[in-house]
Length: 278
Image 1 (cartoon, one colour):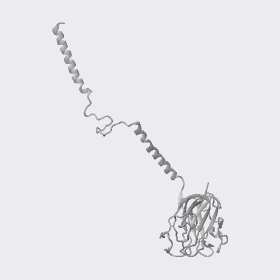
Image 2 (tube, one colour):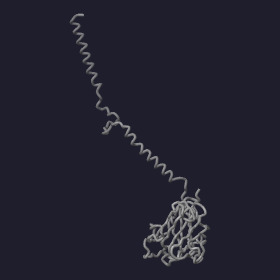
Image 3 (cartoon, one colour):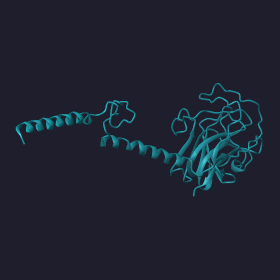
Image 4 (spheres, helix red, strand yellow):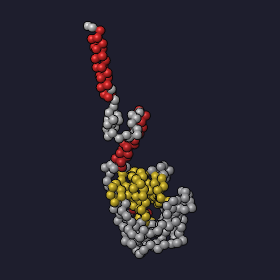
């Protein structure tokens, strides 16, 4: 090969390499229309940083909390059926509810019938016919058995009258019960207000074991059980319904300390709505 031919060959090869390089450069660059990694829409999100292990861990408590909420709802919506308890009311003997302005902390009359009280299906008056004892063993009028005999009418021969000042009556349910409501009628012949009304439950007759107070309207601690937060109320044919919130007990004790008419303590009926403890 002549020297001239060699030079020509070198020039051809050089041109070929130059053209090849020029054609290869665009293929190594990213197309302007190609979207950023991790964003198929082509719009920048401002933060395409991959999630770190710490960020992943931070989501776990939310998932656990949601599961706990589900379990709590499930516990509250179990198979228990709640229905209105059937309270048979006696006939009213006076119209309206006169206000005694001399009584402090007196609740206002509702002005309509008391709304239904819900309790688990099968709840009934478990005090009916049960034994009753009292701090006054010799009532002035009537018998202690009147308190659980089912007669709630405002009439002579339907109530028991205990002595003056602080007195109590105790009902033995003769078994452990889950108690949802207690309804007491002191004496609804007149629109009276009874003082120092305290209702307690316990596991034993001496009220030593597991004593709990479920109602207390003693505003000055004269009964000795602490200052009560409940309000005074006026006696009506509806009686006073006390929410016992399913407390478990065998004995129910009710205190009072006279009323706006005199210092005596009267009881017409006490009903205890509950179910046996399984």
